Image (cartoon, rainbow over all chains, first blue to last red; front, side):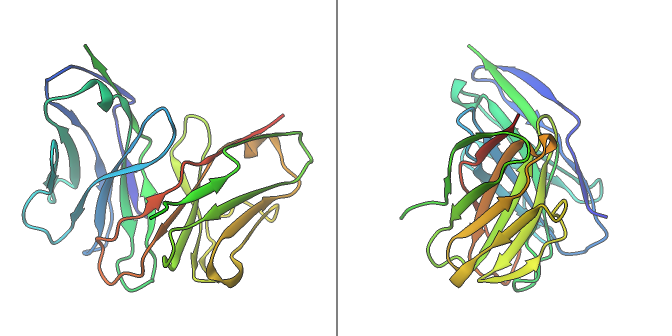
Length: 118
Length: 116
């Protein structure tokens, strides 16, 4: 069965420093997608970044980058130059099924609470 | 363009009562998903609609939960009768039809349900 594991319940980082949030996954599928979402205290889920299993380069979106190590089955999120507004819960997720409307549900990890200190 | 909208944002009900949550997906999105996060635990998938059809309802916890998506537009999730363990945040998400994996699911702000 597919599974996402986030081993860091909480993390602290100093403002303007970089931080890495860990995510490992388990799947027997060859084709899959990995996502990171941010959930601030207001509650909404904000999409941050996506990595496809066949993508050879690590995904980047502004200050977010995904350190994808396929052999290790890890998809860590790196946030550079942390800002106070980055304080939030971060979820790693895997898409189950990539065919046309064959699936698409997301399997989430437990989340990591990131606190940015001024 | 409006995002995914959920009503109500908060609901407090007594055990045994009925509650209906509503989700309005982004216009044109065929896929609609319901998820739930119980306090302190991971977000769990409940079910997936493709237009008005239930594609996957493997995550529905029991028959007290009923989801509908009449006409393939908005969806409702009814809990009847509600139990204490149903408390949590219920999220709705929608996405376009996709051929590959890189299709972002847009989430609503969630409905915080408290059963007392």
